[in-house]
Length: 479
Image 1 (spheres, rainbow, N blue to C red):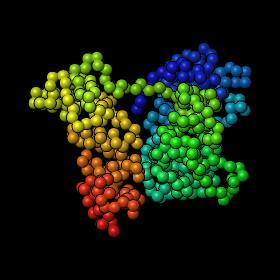
Image 2: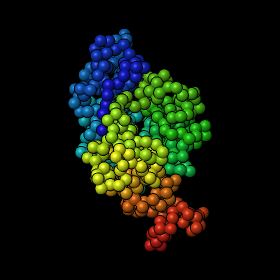
Image 3: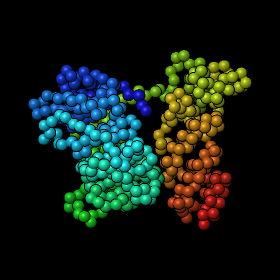
Image 4: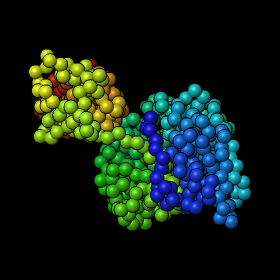
């Protein structure tokens, strides 16, 4: 769990609902750790004391503030806005309430209720809500849904070929889920069943997002694809048609607002969906971009107290030299948390020369990542940075850091695709990552990634002799 700090005033005042809210509102905002602007007239704030408040600006311009007792003391971490709005807590519980249009709403009182049904006892990790339809993804990869119903129901796993789902998205016309192997399943809101998407891409999909009338799919190689609702083609028999967005290349990420037609592609353009309307906002943050366009948060606003990537030099007593660069650390911390470093700093270890250690055969980023994990207890690399994750996994294995190795292995197992499969298979065995080796072998054989285009010699070059022999044997047993 990230440690939240108070949101700076300048990050809140770009939203009209949090600008000039009166003395009571100003006092609350001074202790705000979470905030969400639904529109110009509505917003939510959670304070560091875990008190939740609903801000509502009336027609006269005044802001009415109501404490929401149902959401106090439950540690809300995210708000999801829609016709049905929801609050997700840190332990994965959901609370929901109906939200009439702010234009016609006269009351500033809401009454959230805990969501039960098929989600009882489950930990929710992601939610999509639009036009009375809700999708909820749980930590075990299951998808639950409901449509103006008081309780959700589970969508059977076989609807997604029994694959683990890692993301959900949807609007008033189409629902989409993304599985762990980068495949999409889609279905219409009105009673149809999930089916494999007709979207054809050269690399696996890594992220899906939805605006009010458009669904986006971003692939590992940075290509954008989109489906947009068209009133002329919206019939009971219509089939979704995905189109590539040729103007968007090497995109790293995308953010959308589910209640508006607004999308932001990191590193490219910002504009209203569909992607024909574009303009540069290179200097603006994502929050500023959405505030300029629609005054609606694309996500719940919070600020994390990020640990430093490298410890401050002050009070450090050990210096590592890696690829000509220095990393400073503390012997006591490393010794207490790592048996390997405890031995390194003992009199028996010949590599340690007082306060200086020369590290050979390791990339700087990988060794820095190892120290970061020892200090902060988490992997610093993104889930798609498979080369550094593999490097950290191998280094952790050589240092007998089993927990770090297993965590890296688990991340890699959840993100196998055509681009990294051969690389992972080549390196899995050398890190004793047997589960990863087994899974990536299965993915290669199931999807015939090697196809008929690679000769045996080319496969040996890609995999190395040992991994090639194992793959060949696995293929023979399967046949």
